[in-house]
Every structure is written in structure tokens, then in C-alpha cells.
Image 1: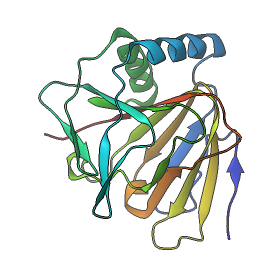
Image 2 (image 1 turned 90 degrees about the horizontal axis):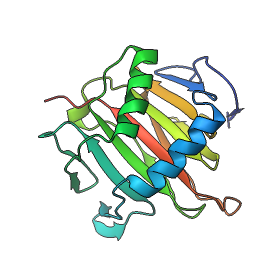
Image 3 (image 1 turned 180 degrees about the horizontal axis):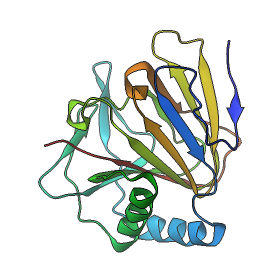
Length: 202
């Protein structure tokens, strides 16, 4: 099994077929603290049912969608209508866009209340995201292990510790050939908020 834990790297973390880069101090601690508190209190968090292997279960996390009007986003049987951008979300979006020189239309927000909240293996490959989507993932709160594995060669894995105020960029062919998850952890007690910015194609 090929597996590494990356704590601080701006190089491509994938050995082939895609690009994933990690920026651990994208936000300073003070700003990250303020944004974490703001997002906990101000975003319209909901727990949605999803359909997995033909059965409906409640997502083990809270979610919210913000973005451009008239462009819904769906996955796993969920159809979400975006809420208007908040000033804080727009500020984070602007900072990421200036850094990456990319444009994003929506942000899917995930609130992991403790280590028992999680997200299973999946790829962000919905048709509305286009051929080779760029996903910008920002973390606030408790650090969590983020896992990547090759879609067909599942023994090839990469682990990244997503820290408070960090940015993870997934680009190129990564959503074709790699899947990712945020596993449960009995050691994590604190909450984590994850903002995943993406561009939807009309």
C-alpha cells in the first residue's frame, strides 16, 4: 500500500492523473477564528437525506449551498437551490479567486459537528461541473484527515491533514481518476467547517 501523510506541501500530491495542492496557512489564525465563528452562526445549515445504493439515509453532516441565482446543484439524490452570497463567503471567494486566477459560481458548505460526522468515498464529477473541474476546499476549525485514493487502483492512497485556515486545490483530471473522503474519527471532538468552491456550467 502506498500512503503518505502530507502536512505542508504546495507540490502536486498525486503521483499521476490529476493535480492536488495544499496550502496550510492560506488564512491567518486570527482571521480563520473569526470566519469559523461567523459561519457557525450565520449560514443556513440543514441536514439533508441522501440516497446511497438505493436507500435513503440522513447525511452525517450539515450542509448549505450559496451561489449564483437560477443555478441549482444536485448530488446523491439531493437538489439544492443556492442562497445569495453572504459578505463573509464573498470575501473568502474573492481571496481564492485572486490567488488561483479562477472563477467560482457556487460554494457547497459542510459542517462536521464532531468526529462522527463524515463524508464517504466519492468524486465530484457531476456533469454540471464540466470536464475537468477545479475544486477549492477551505477548512476552518478542527483539523481532519482527508483521504484520496485512485479510483481503479485503490491501494494507491494519499492522506492530507486539513488544518485550520488551509486551502486544498483539486484540479486537472483528479475528479476522473481519484476519489476522496473525510472518514470518521473517535479522536476529534471539535467542529470543522469546510467550504468547497466550484464553477457550475449552464
